[in-house]
Structure formats: C-alpha cells, structure tokens
Image (cartoon, rainbow, N blue to C red; front, side, top):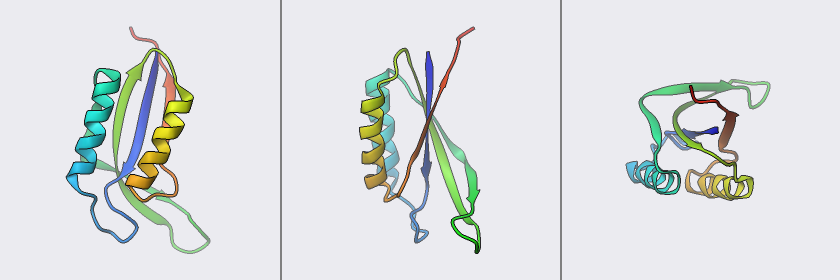
Length: 102
C-alpha cells in the first residue's frame, strides 16, 4: 500500500491566493480516482527554503493525501505537470511512502 502526499501552495509567487475552486477540483479528482482523499487545509503548513544566497523563500501550503494499492508513476508524472500549470509553479512536490496498514 502506498501513501501519496501532494504539497500545494495557497498563494502564487505574487502573494495572490489561488481560487478555492482549484482546491475543490483537486479534491474531487483525487476522490474519484482513488475512492477517497484527506486534505489538511485548516492550518496550512509553512515551507521555507533558500532559492539563492539572499533571503529565504516562504510558502503556506496545504497537503492532500491518498492511499492506493499500486503506484502508477506515469500517471503521477502527468498529473504533477498538470498541477504545476494549474498552480503556476516550477515544481509541485508529490511524495510517496510505502505503508503497512495495522
């Protein structure tokens, strides 16, 4: 079993929030494909990284999670590219962990 997490920004690089519809569409697409989705939306996580030698970059993010029996890498690569376009990002992080249900 795999746990797949999608980390998405709440704001674009200009500080403008993405429409709520973007997140609803994402939720609905994942729920339809995987039979369910968990979204961590209320308390956004905060990301911080150095894009250069100057000031660090800050992001408020939300996390979506799905579980699946198989990992369709080609589908996820294509979906990541779609999200990068939808959320105007150079890179959207999608990470996967193999898990065991107890």
